[in-house]
Image (cartoon, rainbow, N blue to C red; front, side):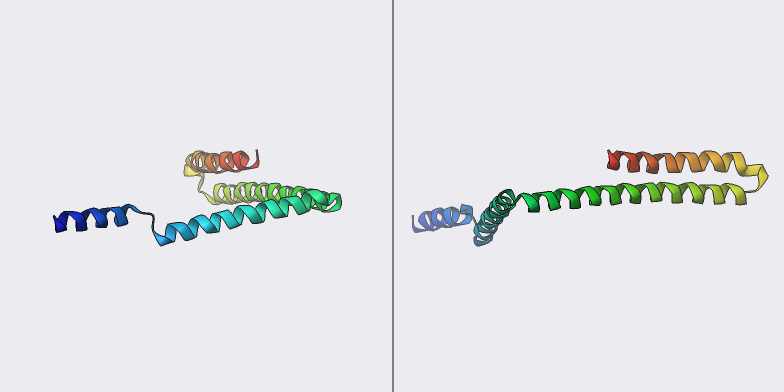
Length: 113
């Protein structure tokens, strides 16, 4: 009987949330409170809202330019590869480059949309 009680108590303790889980939960609550506080401060200041909007717009433009540059680099790389390929395998190289870069270009386009 004593063993049954010991096992029962161990099972209860074992099924209780760990200390770490409590710390994570408290950390998440603090993060949410900080987010609320920051949102409140941003919403109180129209100039700050405007600045954030401008910064986000500039950031998005920069990302689009980055993806555009990556696409241009892929095009130049393909052109170098095709130009340097012997005539006998040039058509095969063109098809290989197209298949390889089509996937990457599709991914770049998806990221920008």
